[in-house]
Amino acid sequence: MKVGFVIENLEKISDWVLLEYSHSRKLSGKSNLTISGSGKVSGFNTEKRHAWELALPDPIVLDPNAKETLEPEDFSEGENFLVLGGICGDFPPKARTAPLVTKKFPKGTRVRSLGSLQLPTDIALWTALEISKGRKLSEIPFFPQGEFKLSEYESVKINLGYPSVKGKPLHTPGLLELLRKREKF
Image (cartoon, rainbow, N blue to C red):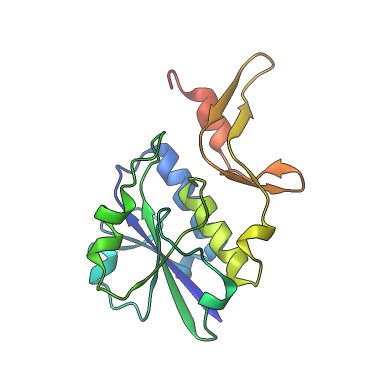
């Protein structure tokens, strides 16, 4: 089984977005990830056309507000394509995936969620990969909020879900260093 991912980029390529996309590329494999709807992003397979304009056979659109969750049974033995919205999250969530991505696909396209938590793009991709390997979403423990220690006296809470891997939140490599450099939040 092969799983390919298309991230429909809807954000300016900031340092944070680039970190998430780089982690996504590492998780999926460079040839299994395309950034669509944007110009050239150095080091990535990019496509100027939008995800819904690509000839993806039977794609699954990941939308946090979908009625059905992604299940191992959603994957076939052949090629599978998942579309993620590259949208920086808001708190509370504004449900932008449906109007900006989901509704642009033809009627009948499969739409699935990854549960009730808002996830960073790379973490959504990691979660989908775990499910493609046969793990049910209910078997993946999540921290409902990421709390990251920046120094002895300072930490920051991010209102996004992070899976628990060996009792610690799985987060984007380089994120802590980026947060430590930020002047404001």
